[in-house]
Amino acid sequence: MAAPAIPATGRAIEVRASRGLWRDAMRRLLRNKPALLGLLFIGIFVFAAVFAPLIAPYGPLEGTLVQRMKPPGGAHLFGTDLQGRDELTRILYGAQVSLLAGVASVIMGLSIGGIAGALAGGLGGWVDSVLMRVVDVMLSIPGILLAIGIVAWLDRGLPQIMFAVAMTNAPIFARILRGSLLSLRNSDYVTAAQSIGAPPSRILLRHMLPNSLTALIVAATLALATAIIDVAGLGFLGLGPPDPRTPEWGTMLTDSTKFLRQAPWLIFLPGLAIVISAIGFNLLGDGLRESLDPRLKR
Amino acid sequence: MTKYILRRLLLTIPVLIGLSIVLFAFIHLLPGDPAAAILGQHATPDRVAAMREYLHLDDPIWQQYLAYVSNLLHGDFGTSVINNQPIIHEFLTRFPATIELTLAAMLYAVGVGIPLGRFAARHAQSWSDGAVTIVSLLGINIPVFVLGLTLQYIFAVQLKVLPASGRLDFSLRFDSPTNFLLIDSLVARRFDVFVDAARHLVLPAIALGSIPLAIITRITRASVLDVSNEDYVRTARAKGLTDGRVDSRHIMRNAWLPVVTVIGLQVGGLLAGAVITETVFAWGGVGRYVVDAINNRDYQVVQNVILIFAFVFLIVNLIVDVGYAFLNPRIRYA
Image 1 (spheres, each protein chain N blue to C red):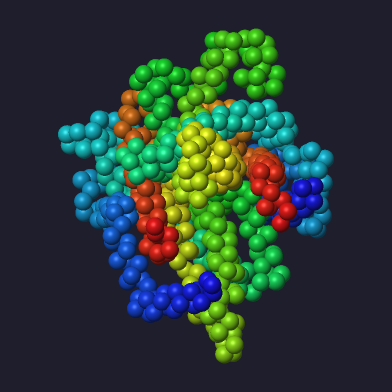
Image 2: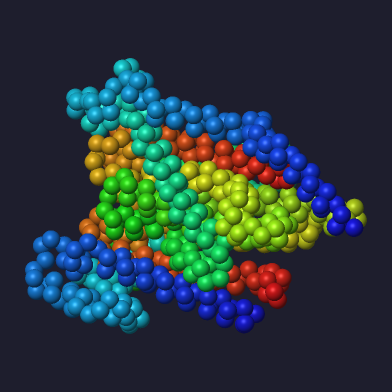
């Protein structure tokens, strides 16, 4: 009874897809209020990162010890830090470091995990078994501990941090893509492509990968939130950028922990920046999931 | 069931071998002479030579690996270059502190998360449900160290109702044989120590438990809502059962499974989060041991503590999987 119904809906989705799946998803996303709020949060920090030199009231390294730990207000809206530098300025410049590190690490993780997942899901056999055991091993080291180990090994530095956070994400991306490819392997359009003699590489690249992308895009957006938190976490543990003057949110926070009593704003304000940007990517990721997969929406 | 456990056990062996290869590479791919890197700049040539022999650096690489694994299997996890103590000894002394912290965090997350999720599901789409959603969104996105420092500021600096850091007040002298402070103090009938240790545990446990709390709340809410729409729940209500009975007998029994899975999945996050929480609260556990080791470039400590953490994580996952199969017959007989 259900059998005739499935091809019918399948055809309906295809017709809509040809009219533009992405524009359709975009329209749904713009009607999703939490996702818009997320976009707004992200927009604020992207704007801050791009225009920091223009909108920041001071230079990121400019300050004298006489001006240290001034509470928020007056000439310094967010107060000043332990070296007398303007905290607002450093948070704005910090957006450059944190967003760059977050985005770069997710792109790196996507490339590594994407290739591994595509090879595993596309080729199957022993390639699949070997790659998935590697993924199991990497996932057996819980979260940030893997990143800590990699930074300890490669030494401190922004590229090392990005790579370390990327390696915590890569196995997750690999699993998602592989799972999605496996579920598509027996779908009708793949069988159709095979039966007209399309080579496996073409089937993988033109038919299977585009249909697996949505799951990966959602996962990557959500991973941006954890990447920003992990980068800040490494900074907090003292594994941040080697130049201590670099305005990185986590490092700014860890420098001030000893002065929690005297200058709590030096903890709360960079902390708030981390939380708001993470929430932004989380809301956007959830919104993307709903708009890219209309079946989820009730 | 036995067959399932055996198969699951066998599956962890390749992971363990892979893990040992990765961590072996961690030391043996260090730039320059690994022995010199482990011992630091001020090592005497004698000590470097001794370390080269210990690591079998003059043998082919596969013999070096076999030597590493054989040491591990003999319980030799190397010595710390900072205090010359066997790493396993230091680990075992500190691990109870980490267990105490993670268990307390888990207890908090489960104890608050499940009732909160059930509450939100019962009042779905109301303002209180919205409030729970916002709190859980915040809980997932607030880094452990930001929440920890905020709690310290509110409850220790401003209100002065809870201690800011450490595990026990310095004025209380207490020799804890197992380092499980809460248990040891009860055994020794030192109730003042027990109360003080429990008070020290509150803030770090809340900070560490916030992410699992948020996730457990979300899953419980979704799962309860899902089951509430089932036909058999409507039938149960139609035949006149009380709300409480429908809740306990028909909804919760079926809503448990996803919740239990998610609770199991949180263990890894808790172990990793403990590293940062212990740094914030000066908690003398394994997490701080790793962070100190990195700052001291004590590579063998980093290597082997990560190995033991991963091993513990694998064991916990194994227990969770078996427990899940026990709860869900569909998996057991698959």
